[in-house]
Image (tube, rainbow, N blue to C red; front, side, top):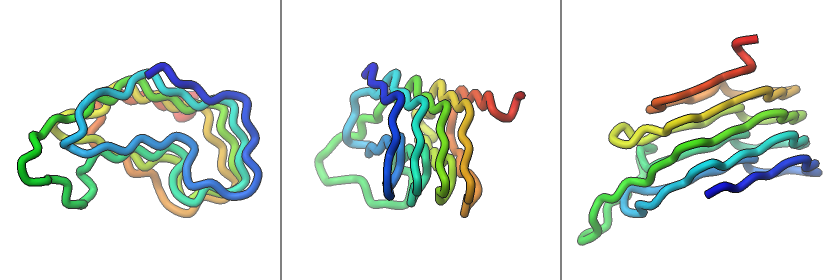
Length: 130
């Protein structure tokens, strides 16, 4: 909760800049996480990567209750990358959609795949509104 990464330059290769991963048995919450003004050379997956267990992986373990994770208040703005697989890979849980994802300026020189966006209650894409 309440985590921010700002004013960073990443040399070389990284997997993602904002990564949120959870499963149906984890529970808890992820709130108010922001990545702002970051420059990266190569992002091998998505710049913003959020997976909540609806991505085909077996996630149930016998005897564990289903307790979904609340994801609320993610932000990415002022991002520049020379290359990335995609800008957004956001796969919310249909029973507990992601709330309040804000995407500002994300500039990528070479982009390989289109965005994937599923199960969001509130999505603000400032870059496309300008």
